[in-house]
Length: 222
Image 1 (spheres, rainbow, N blue to C red):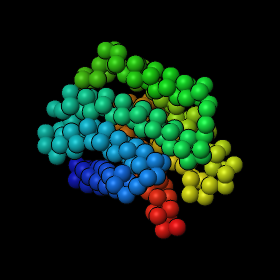
Image 2 (cartoon, helix red, strand yellow):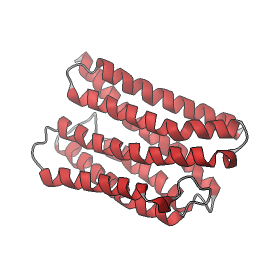
Image 3 (spheres, rainbow, N blue to C red):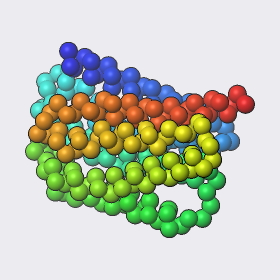
């Protein structure tokens, strides 16, 4: 039953995110913000597919223990694409609120993203092993969490300052995604049931993408 339910959920998630992303890329027109948001959504879906597709295959066939290397490689790829996702979201923020300059802020975003990617590349992560060390999961997620926190603050402040109704909950979608993700990083190996938090975490990302897509539709009707 878990295999069926989880596989159906993952297929719906990937299909939804990729569909909305591609649609934004195709219909965004000259609006750079909408096209960038579409690219961000495609990056999210395509990256997650590298982890979710092998997981679905494992659940529906011989079990997760026989797909350790594929799952680890997918997790590595997803870690990189999620970092790119937040860098793109930073530029969505700049475009939406017509932010100019702020080179120091941009440098900080790139520094955190580069730190995250660099930490992911260390062999000590042992991505392909079944008993990968939890401590390296913590280390590589520190700059990632800081990057997420920065994006949260930027969208929260800007949406309030500009009375931006369309993006008023963008910050909350990111808060929720990290609130559900961090316990998985810290305790899922010890308490496998905590891994179920990835479901609401995934829903939070769908909400993120839906906000951008809904704004594009509203703009097109105006």
